Image 1 (tube, one colour):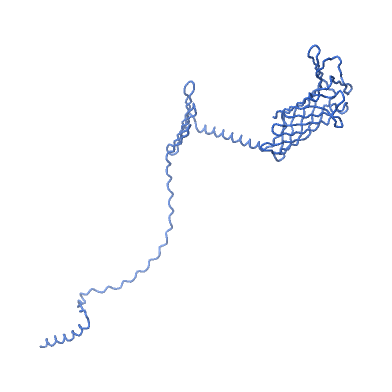
Image 2 (cartoon, one colour):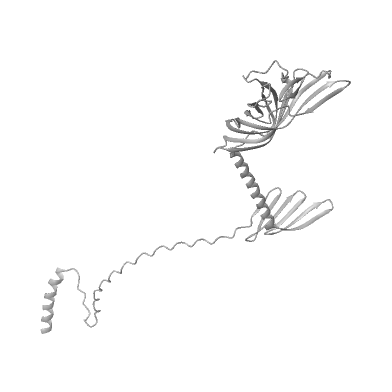
Length: 352
């Protein structure tokens, strides 16, 4: 009876509770069986930042061994063998050369067969280099020559002679009248030397030459000397005179100032200055017909000036070169008569 009353009381307590909630609480196991609650795990401290590692430079690629190289021309074949050796075959007509490094062999075909020579390529290269050095020096020398002042004096010249009086008029009216067309003047200027005045366009010129002057008389006469005076020599004993002349030879040396003016690829050269000479010979010559061709040659001093000085002018372009000489010294010296001053004009035929 007591149990029944307790059960009814329990039901009365449980019913309101079940009406207030939909779920039925699940009975919990006893504490000794229940798993203990996991304790809260503390957060791990932040790890410090790791410094950036600098980039390691890439290692250079190992050089690759070059492949064998072949090179061929009509006369030469070149093949690379291994790392450093080059095999070359060169064919030059009758000669064939084989080269491997510093060793070589030359095979030459001749009339009597083949000739084989062992060639030291290092020496051959040294010889070629020496030859190239010589060529380079020659080219440099040519270049230097182009920059140097080049004088214009040496050469062979031809011109005509005549005289002027003290008043600079052409001499006429005496036995010294000349046939100008036959009075030839020849100059062989065998030596020249030029000094540039800081440029290749202006310079001083000197040298040396020999001058042969022929003074052919207009009449059939000649000359003679008597007490320092010059007289006519008619020579009545000679008949059929064809030519009579006075010939002189002087060794000359000039001093000129030369200017060169560019004209296209060439230059016009103009020079003027003084010239002096020393007499090294004189003679008269008569050609006549007396039973055949005859001639008389007389070597004498004829009171000619032993030394003389004068002025000279020269102008030229390419192959055309002209000259003119005038002497301030009288032909027959300071005291002899007649008082005549020689001059000549002409052109340069050959330049040295």
